[in-house]
Structures are given as C-alpha cells and as structure tokens.
Image (cartoon, rainbow over all chains, first blue to last red; front, side, top):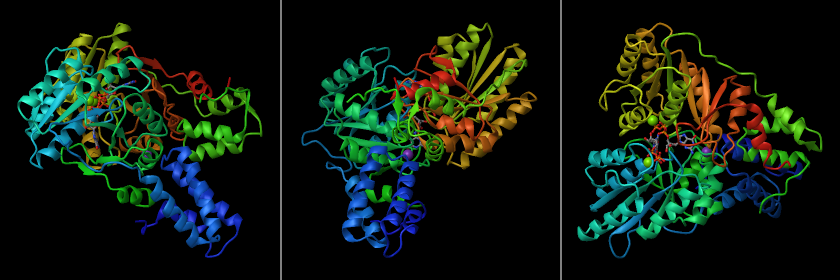
Length: 290
Length: 269
Ligand SMILES: Nc1nc2c(ncn2[C@@H]2O[C@H](COP(=O)(O)OP(=O)(O)OP(=O)(O)O)[C@@H](O)[C@H]2O)c(=O)[nH]1
Ligand SMILES: Nc1nc2c(ncn2[C@@H]2O[C@H](COP(=O)(O)OP(=O)(O)OP(=O)(O)O)[C@@H](O)[C@H]2O)c(=O)[nH]1
Ligand SMILES: [K+]
Ligand SMILES: [Mg+2]
Ligand SMILES: [Mg+2]
C-alpha cells in the first residue's frame, strides 16, 4: 500500500538511519509533523499519529525500517473507517439519498455525477431539487439532469423543501424509480435555523444514505463542520470534491478518523464523468508523494 | 468541551491555536519561535498584526471602473459580485454586470437573478459562448450608457487547471481592448474555509494575471481563514473585504484588528 514513499515523507525518513537514537527519532517525528500539517491533516490526528509512530518505533527498536513500518501501519489504521463502500442499494427500492454539506462544496454537481454513475449502471434515477435558497439552484440541477438525460423533479416557486421531497417520493414510488437523489441547499453547521430545516427534510425523505459533500481543499475546519453535521443530522458517507486540486488528502485522513464515517466517492473535475469510488490507496499515494 | 479562556498562553497552546486557524505551518513555526514562555493577548496580537501591511488598493477615478472577479470553483465569486454591486449602488453609483461564466450550468441564470434583485443591467449570452466576448460587450455597454462600475463574473477554475489559465488571460486581454487599462482591478475570491490551498491559489492566480486585491468569503462560519496571514505577509496582496453570509448586505471591509481578535478569542479572555 505504501510502496511509493517520496518527497514529503522521505525528508522525515532521511533524518533517521538504519539504526539510530532517540534524538534522530525526535527529528524524524518533527519532519513528519510538518509534512502532515502542510497537507492540512487535522492537528489532533497529527498528534495521535505521531504518538503512535513514536511508541511503535521505540518498541521495535529505533531505526529507519521500524519507523517506516510504524508509519505505514498507523496511517492505514487511521484511513480505515468502518462502513459501506461505493454505492449501496436499499433492499427495497427506491434507494433514497440526501445530499448535504456546506455552501459551494459541490452538492449539486455531485448529485448529477452520481445520477450519471447510476444511470450508466442501468438504474432508473430521479434527481430532486430541494435547494430553494440559492438563486437558480433549481435551474442548475435541471440543466445538469437534461445534460445527462436523467429525470428531474422540481417545483417552480415552492418555498418549502419538505413539500418538494414529499411530492418527489410519491412520484418515485408510483413510477418505480430505483434511486432518488435529493439536492439540498448549502448551509453552515452552526446555522441553527437551516440545520433545523435539514432535519425536517431528512425526516420527510427517510433516506437510506445521507452523504456529506466536502470540499477537499478545506483546512482544519473540515473536521469541525463534518462532526457537527454528523451530530445533528447523522451522515452515512462522505464525498470529497475538487480532488483535482492541490489537496494532498489531509481532509480525507482527518475525516475518516475523526468522524468515523467512510469516504465513498471522490470528485475529480467539473464534468459529469469526473467521479470515482473512493480507494484509500489513492489518498495515501497523494499524501505520500506525487 | 469549551476550553477555558485565559490571560496567558504557552507557545504550545499558541501553536495549536494558529494551526487550528489554518495559519501556514512555516509561519506558525516562525511566530512561535519568537515568543517567550508566557504570552498574553496583546503581545500575540501585535505579533500577528505586524504581518498585515497597510493595504489599500483604492478605486481610481476612472469611468467605467472595470473589475474582473476570479477564483476557484464555489469560492463565492458570483455572490460577491452581487455584494459589491449592492455596495456600489449604496454609494450612489451605477453598476452593470457581465455574465462571463458561460461554462457552469445555470451560472448565467444565477447572475441574472441577482441583477433582477439588485435592479441593475446585465450583459449575458448563452452557455458555451466565448466569455471574453461577454466581457468586451459589458464594457462597451458601460461606456455607451455612461455607467460607473463594471463587474465581470468568470467561471470557477482551480489554480491547478493550467488549460483554463489561457482563457483567463484572454479575458484580461480583451478587457484591455474594450477599454485601455481595463480590467482596473482583478479581484481574487478566496474561500475562508480553505487551508494551505488558498495560499497556492493566491500565488498561482497572481502569477497568472496579477491580482490587485483579495476578498475572503464564508468567514461567518467557524473557520478563521488563517491563510490570509501568509497571503498578506508574503505575497503582499491587499485583503479588501470579507464575506459574512449569503445575502447582498453580507460584505464588510477587511479590518485586521477585528480579524486577529477573532482568532485570539478562541483561547484568550
Ligand atoms: N474542479 C472541480 N470542480 C468541482 C468539483 N465538484 C464541483 N465542482 C465545482 O464547484 C462549484 C460548486 O459546485 P456546486 O455543485 O454548485 O456546489 P453546491 O454545494 O451545490 O453549492 P451551493 O448549492 O451553493 O451550496 C461548481 O463550479 C462546480 O462545477 C470537482 O470535483 N472538481
Ligand atoms: N455562508 C456564506 N456563504 C457564502 C458566502 N459567499 C458565498 N456563499 C455561498 O457559497 C455558495 C457558492 O457561491 P457562488 O457565489 O455561487 O460561488 P462561485 O465562486 O461563483 O461558484 P462557481 O461559479 O460555481 O465557481 C453559494 O451557496 C453562496 O450563497 C459567505 O460569505 N458566507
Ligand atoms: K487539504
Ligand atoms: Mg447547490
Ligand atoms: Mg459563479
């Protein structure tokens, strides 16, 4: 999993010889800390990782090999959150998915990408425009749906997303849709009124999955916001967007460990096919080199 | 688990405070190394304030005054245009918008709805059309109608997408053809919740087209936008405004004092 240790981590490794002393280990750990923080890994996760690596290295005898092994083992553990992988269908259709997250994280685009992904797998998909806040959000989803030739549900001039969701689900059951993807308005985790609204939307939708769509360029706040969404709404998966940016995967490592919810997909571009099932190795590779 | 507020903090506590605020780690190391074993609020505040150069990029007396809005996807460009337009209108100026994001689905409709809400004219074409032509037409219309301020939206582009750099450079060139010296300000919109990437964004966009000022959005959340410290200190880019919400009123001039206080509030009384 970690064959290609390059750049950022190799500078840590350089500080420590085949057999070495505690002083060298301290230096290597300081380098490691630096590269993790520069990759925007959450500081609590960094602290924990450093502690574990120090303990394991000492237990095995300080040296380059034991340091490397300790790093590999603990990074792997931290990346592995228990739960589902990729897209999982409900036993009884339709599978209902609620798309949630902060403003501008990529919810609407990712709703389209997922719809496209499922359509290519032969599923009958309905996308639902329940963002009635942002100007032209309904129109955005309508155009995306048209572009990928997937059915769209929206209600012009409706103010209550709960009503939209109820009407959409009624239609989905009648018309035997396999999957219903519900786009919601972006909101801050500390915005109580909007979080309250999202709770009502969730109750109405009774979703099989609540995806939290997170921008992979986010800094230390990624954990705080995701944790609050998880506490208030309950999320079953994370989708990381804008992975085509310069993020080194710090958010991925932080979220998997601190929130304990599995990463399911990553978005790697603005176009509809730019969606990949999350594979931990990719994140690790990005974090460790390239 | 609300941490107790204190009078003095140790370098370790300050390190954590700054990291949590997304201050670049190299800068954190530098700041922390210069601190004594016990630091009070005022001392640290001065240390951080020092990083902000008095930064103003005043609006010159040019008519029309053309501003090009750039930044990565979802940073808040289109919304910030509405906020700036609202502000200029409050100052008694006339404004026109240019919908030069011809790429993203319903980007044109989004800005058009804002124009209706603000009651300002807009120049827009169809999705897929040449964005620099839209920029040109907007400036031409502003000149013909004697309008004070031109705000041109652009499609979100990651600083890593080098293929989109050319398009942006072309928009800048074509603005200059429509009016000499335009765009008079290229404003970079940065998402305040982003980490070290924001610094890379500022660097790359600055190298690409030359950035005249930065507006940082989404500081109404729990993020502190500490990348600004490096952007101001190292890149010497002026921070002009902060976005504090989704409404057109939610824009405030950047105040280093207030900004630093918001960071310090997390641990200091
Ligand atoms: N480069 C890149 N851009 C993306 C990706 N996902 C989304 N975007 C872009 O990010 C911007 C915001 O995406 P939206 O889907 O509108 O985000 P949202 O979360 O629905 O935004 P709000 O509804 O305003 O909260 C758009 O310009 C998208 O094209 C991605 O994986 N990579
Ligand atoms: N809370 C908060 N939300 C904001 C702020 N500025 C913008 N937003 C929201 O962020 C989301 C994205 O804003 P846009 O203005 O569409 O961003 P953009 O940069 O034009 O996005 P693209 O054109 O897709 O690249 C919208 O939901 C806005 O309402 C802000 O200061 N605070
Ligand atoms: K990151
Ligand atoms: Mg949306
Ligand atoms: Mg926009």
